[in-house]
Image (cartoon, rainbow, N blue to C red; front, top):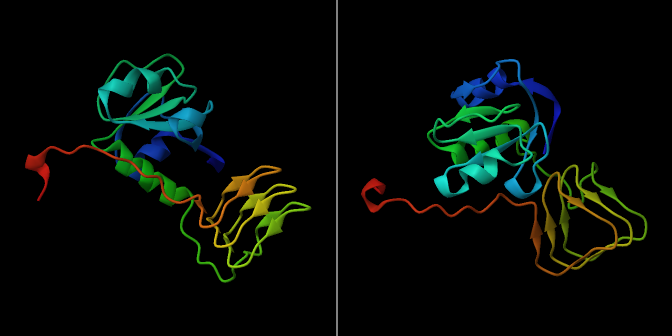
Length: 173
């Protein structure tokens, strides 16, 4: 997701109450998952196996659970739980908006697109041209669908990310 304006590293760190490495005025313009990050984005990493991938990605701010050498031109946000803090940032920048219609007034639907009955199209959704959205599909807020896409019945797009994290047994209550 891209933010509606750029933020300084210090501002982002204060939202999640964490330490940072880098210039306090370092600019941050969005956040995303590792496979789609761009320059200006935050990405999170919480396992040593993936540190190098995150540190060498296009992301310029890495939300990480260990102090490591900061690559030139990048910044680090040091957190005891990067996944939790990534979700806090997501909710901060794109808070839940109540839906008052099955197709939100702010949704943009391309020419020639067909939406079958019993679908939910959330706030600020963009659906391209000539798409077919079968029945009982839910498209959550801020989701973007390109042109000529078919979405089959019962699909949910734009839901919260699923993340599996193995937790040692002695930390489970």
